[in-house]
Image (cartoon, rainbow, N blue to C red):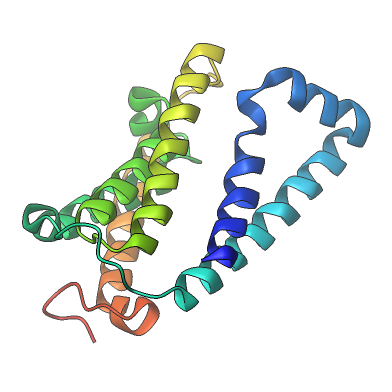
Length: 188
């Protein structure tokens, strides 16, 4: 559990730096933009690797609560929406323009449905941490007005929807092989 916790601290910690603008400005002044981005990327990558390793090694017990059946049934649809939002986040889509922060909303949906559909301690720590991060960052990003203006490109909405759904279906199909849990009847 220590590896998982360290990974979450690194990954989410570095992602929370923009929430504190003076801290971010200090890092930028000290490291420069390239140094800041490189450090951000390296810390994120190390944190992500530790999260994956730590989650895989953490015991499945104790079970803190019974999985919510509604979340289990809703998960495939919620995950398709989440993947579409993740795809739309870095494209000039109407989705991004309307929602302003589709990546955070997508990660929030992912973490909430997985939190409710699970119930294990390690899952509660992982998905609960991401959910808390999303709420903090969404409030901060909204308060900071952290949205760059752009003109939507209609075909990018189509690309985001199609690629998000295809990727979600692929992840669901191979979820048991990747994560150890079969989540759809057609999964392998």
